[in-house]
Amino acid sequence: MNRRLGYAAVFALSLAPLLIVSPASAQRKAMSPRDMQNQPAQAPAAPQQEKTFPLGASWTAVSMNGKSIAERKATLQIDSNLRGTGYSGCNTFSAAAYPLRQQGIAVGPMAITKRSCDKGAAEFERAYLVALRGARNWDLVEGRLVIKSASGELRFDRGI
Image (cartoon, rainbow, N blue to C red; front, top):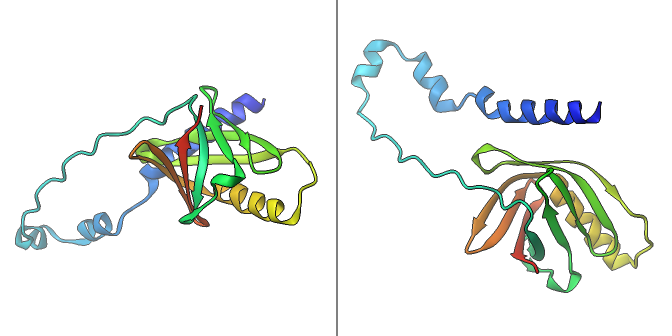
């Protein structure tokens, strides 16, 4: 049953970009054919090559929102079964993680161990996990994995 729900979620998330109407396409639909003739010709955009998410690679977090976090030793790995696992500074976590088209990413609810942590580690862990859970886009920049969410940006170096 859970596997079916997982497939349904992946399917629904993969269709989401197709359902979004951009302001430019809405404006073109609203124009009459006569208006279209008066518009200057636009050069077609060069197709951007789709990047492939590095499944199975281990990543170590080095910065969050531009601040170094290398001393926290937070990690992330997404395996070929689309299972994200890692260490968040005090506890370990796992979650479904789906790399999507156009370098999107969706991270499902997380299962987290419940070790007690000092206040600083607990605050860092919360911010790190909120950023991962809210992840929307990823990119590979100069060999680093960059994950962007509404709550900030995480940068990772490839781990061992």
